[in-house]
Amino acid sequence: MTGAGGTVGVVGGAMAGLAAAEAFHDAGFDVDLYERQSYDAKRVNCGEAMTAVSEIPLDPTPENGFHNPLPALEVEVYDGTASDRRRTGRGEFPAADAYITDRNAVERAWADRLDRLGVAVHEDHPVPSADFLEFADGYDLVVDATGHPSLSSKALGRTDAYGARLVALNADVAGDFGDLHPNARIVLENYTGYVWAFPKTPRRANLGIGWTFDERPDDYFAAFAAACDRNGWPVPSRDRTNVATIPEGPNLDPDRTYLPEHSVVRVGDAAGIANRVTGKGISQAVESSYLAAELAAAGRLEAYPGRLYRRLKPEFLFASVVRHLLEARRPRVLGAAVRAASGVDIEAVDRAPTTVLRRLARNPLLLARIFLRRRALGRLYAGMTDRWRATGAGRGSG
Image (cartoon, rainbow, N blue to C red; front, side, top):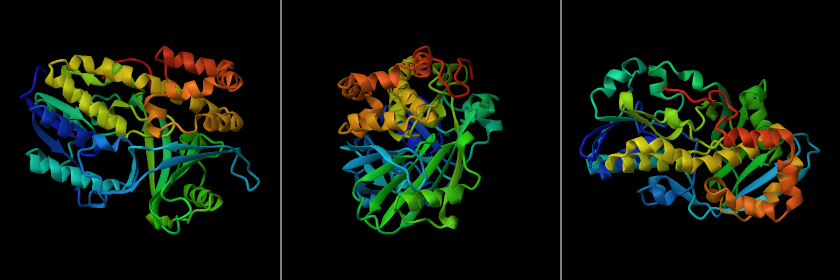
């Protein structure tokens, strides 16, 4: 695809797709946006802690879904979930450009904005995977923003890239969050996952918990309720709790982010770029969509995979080391690392991890405890050589 002025179909109307529709429209393309659900329905209540909010072209008001301008994210590390557990570390990470949101309201406001700008927004319009390639033939370019597994992966029979899985529960809960608000909190409890509290007001919060699939409990809700109870948060009702099984992949693979033979580019979760520890992916999704539009407008979309890869590889390397500490059950080392990194802006932790590494370098003994182990070095080497741990990390077409 060369230059602006062509037709673009964006499939998937969540944050990545909305950002793609905005950016391609701004670049001079004729854009259609297809969303399988209605924006007036309650669509999602995950991903409600948003960073890099200034990149979203909406006024950050409650009417647009932005409730709590987050001062800081608190991170606590414990050595387990038993009643006699001990805290091994605590850090407070400023959040200069972050909000706790009602995500469905943010997406509805953004879709309304796009409609006013002249983007053709097609709600309640799923695109079946069996029809995807024929659908793509009707546009100069299709942006796959359908999440994971991506619609284009399903159409091409390549969902094998999504082998690992996560399980997450979350709920919008009323209660007394005055002791925590306006901060938010993530608690690491010596399993590969975490529990969170994202207060929207002193009386309402999004609470959640997630595990890697091989560590999931027998009774998801009972484990969620117990986590809320031990962390001093109101226990949500079962009927208002959402459960999601989330595939992991394809792990920052440049060969999967742009499919020129089908005129398809993948953004956001469809490109496999969410953080491998926290699952955080909205700022990454928005950035990938803006980058794809910028390069398409310049007639350089072939540069998209490499540019996206270079931007995100440091984050993936850092996340792979942190995930190793979780999997290896090293809560004391992780707690010490959180204490050492405390004070770094939460977006910089992900997007500029060298900032954290400079903090850790002030404590050579801690740095040695993190890295001078065979498995930790192996994880780091695997990332450096593009062999990411989760299933489907290998290169390949489709």
